[in-house]
Length: 116
Image (tube, helix red, strand yellow):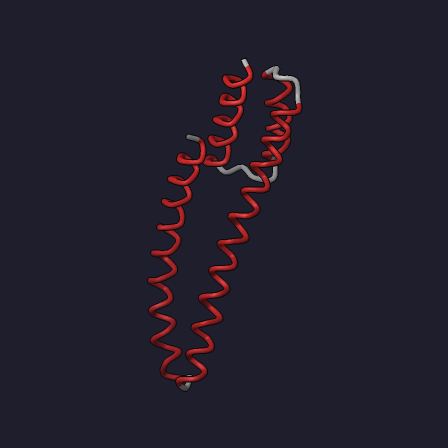
């Protein structure tokens, strides 16, 4: 369930990001075609596509690492709301994304329900 919520949020964010990038990319590509030969343009196009792919992969990996770290905090700490939320709040300082906060809270409540 948590993964589905996370996936829906990520899909919506990525779709918005891709739409904006595509729109700007078309404008830049039209300008570059006037100044670059075919081989140079193909190299540029490959570089840009790989860079954005690697950047998105990096963000996904960073968020997965953060979720795993928070999951470890939740599972290894005594399950008192004050202690868990204190640890989670400390971990959220680096990432104040509302979607991440939702996922963390869902993970916490799922952990409580499965351990009770």
